[in-house]
Length: 280
Image (tube, rainbow, N blue to C red):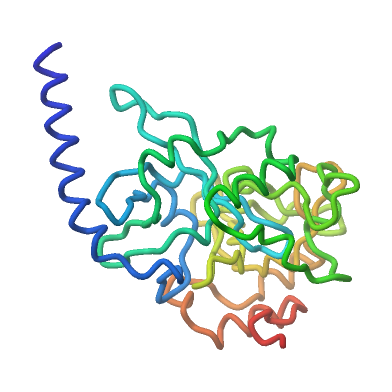
């Protein structure tokens, strides 16, 4: 047992040393640093380092709002004997991405991270917790800057909305969205959400719907604008106002199309949505 512990300790030190040199070459903290959109599956479990080369944890989840803006990254911190520690929610705009080494970088010391407000699911409806967390990391709460009004967004039907708290509603968890089924207004099951796509600014622009096939074999993947979805009355599924036939004729999705702006605009307009990057 003692030999195993020594081996694990040496392995961890070597790993952190390698990642240390990578973190110091990271992109500036002012931007996310992506040169193309990313899928949530690419981001999940990505290492988070600080500029001093200290390992802070891994991306475990993302919390995002009604317009798709990612508000927090949930980081799983290292615990004792390699076991995961208590998760922390960090404002997403405090992170930058080092594409060369495929790590996120947060400009915060290990010691300060340990004193950050603890995250638990019950905090998702707590506006004060969210604002305290943003300010702890030196950020202005995104929802207090001003939000678009009069839009029919997926968040509007959520029963977890906090009454009397303007500008704040319970955010989505990326992990709870994956696997959720999508229905149309005729009550037909269109498929399940297999992935999320974030643009280069860290906003959820598409959900990737898996449909067709048999026992998840031979499934088709279709990108659907996040703004085209509404939340079902039961709170257990999303609704898309489209027939199954029209869904089958949607623009083809492949991972090589993720950086194609013309394709993205075509998909948005196919589903009756205005591409948000064209709005003034």
